[in-house]
Image 1: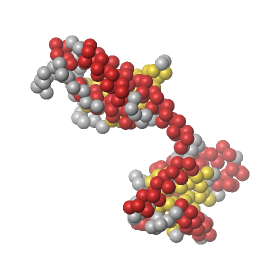
Image 2 (image 1 turned 90 degrees about the vertical axis):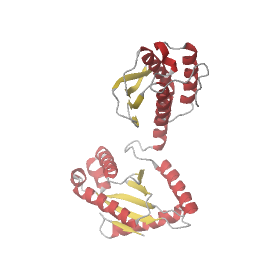
Image 3 (image 1 turned 45 degrees about the vertical axis):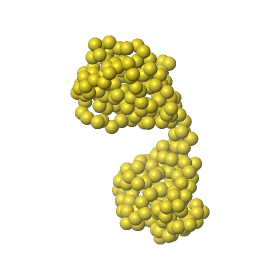
Image 4 (image 1 turned 135 degrees about the vertical axis):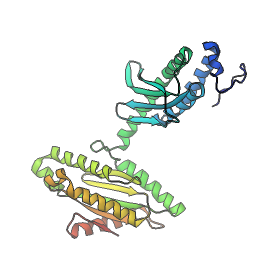
Length: 299
């Protein structure tokens, strides 16, 4: 939504916005701006998008060059348009609850009226940001494996169905990769479930650390993990898996518990269904187990 200011004449862009002429805030203009900002902020339930909206509106009236928010669990950074010359940090509080720290930068120092307006706009951010963060947390609980913080089976099925539909419609390929830990049952039997949980969490971190931006990671249950690799290239997938296995083989904690990984891989073919891809991936995983484990096989 774009605000118009019918009661003021256009001014040179090098001067302050009309809202700040004579360094006096116009109450009617501030009220209209507040109403517009509130409507915009309550239109989004995504924290990152919310901060983007906030930045875009603040930038129309203040020389804002960048914005970031550090919450309790997440960090959101809105791209900086230019290096800031003046900035600070502000704690965002709503109904007595501390949400996090808002970091901001301006291309020049604000005058008193501008600081007052920024204070008022920041107050308007608090409630919708709190709602967005709560909803984000609930989504994480619903779609995230609580032990490893990877996607859970539910969100895996959603992603998988989307990729199958996209592959069918646009004839684009992807790979389904199933990872099963070798020797994990012995960890639970010998050292207990606390050690088993530690191994699962550590293996999830190993998956995250593998250099590839085109992968989505999931824990399907137990010691079974899945990767949806959205690149069609077999060479790229082989590079990913070689890197993953090499990292596992060198990992001190996994070696301490004598844990390795067998992997089954299959590539999307036109007309594939969920069951057909899983059948091939499971067969490939069985081959990897049969061939001595600690390797990957493709079908």
